[in-house]
Image (cartoon, rainbow, N blue to C red):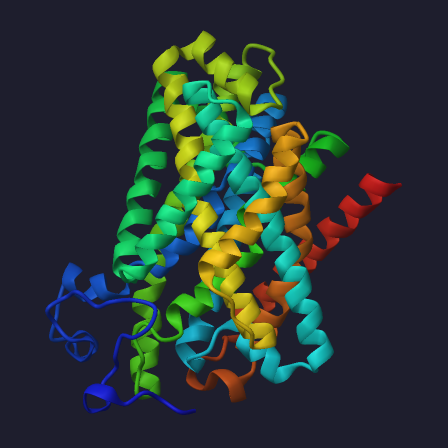
Length: 434
């Protein structure tokens, strides 16, 4: 495989990030740099990918799940997050091992017709993702400031362009901006959990006792899975690691992956904690008081009634920030899948302009925002298999991965997760159309 050999053939950073640490990547890999400084060059890709796990679609499914079933479905989020760690690690590893992203490998390995199909379905998934993110951010503005949805959507559009502008300043700037936004969401839900005063015993039972209560709980579980294991995050993560730090041999590539895996663990832990916090807060406030809350604007009002205005504001702020930050990630993923699957590229700002049209149209038509968010998560669940199955196939192929090929147990787990996802999707089809 052809490698970049700049800086005397040492691993380099290019394209997707700017290495701001004083120490070279080579020094890091040689062990000359210790402690946190050794990890810093590798932090960032998983945090950008993790934003996809905190988009407004998660708010809709998690608040609904918590208000309807209390702590019952916490185990689904816990299990989904464990799946996400494995999936994102496979995606990151593919980029590190090959210097290419998942769509690029698919274009090389599959017939042209298959690549075109994968591109079309991935664009549909990203449109659904963008719908959730855009509507969520607009709804956050409406809840916080009383701005009508259509003007709020236009303000959201301006904000999404501003976040994309961070990318022009280098990926370190983008990573810092998105990490700051994620921390706002984390602090907002930490405050809400404190104010909600959940029952710790019920939380632990919900996390570690797999069970359902009727068909609707299974449907919600599938929606949670669709909102947690995000197809576009799978495509994007391989792109973020493919040329961030390049190893010149198998030993260095394995070192890079071990350090990137720490990034994945931290980011997925944060994302999983926030998702569980959404269910916990809804269970402690709404389910406990016999309230079934399926609309986020109603949730906002009930937060104010049951826990005070500051709690409601923190919820609205988290929704706004999550929508804005995840919208930029969806746009970046769209750029990756087009370039990868069909070897075409359009200006990022043009892509953002095009993808603004569907959510603006839906908002202008007056479609219920929360219903649109929930349905977007169902669409997302259909796209998971088309991203996940090729990922498992490629990372299990020694010719492609060389020394970073999956261990047998990793491949088995990958196929189990893929089978579970496909089974849930088939169940959704039957329930929705039959």
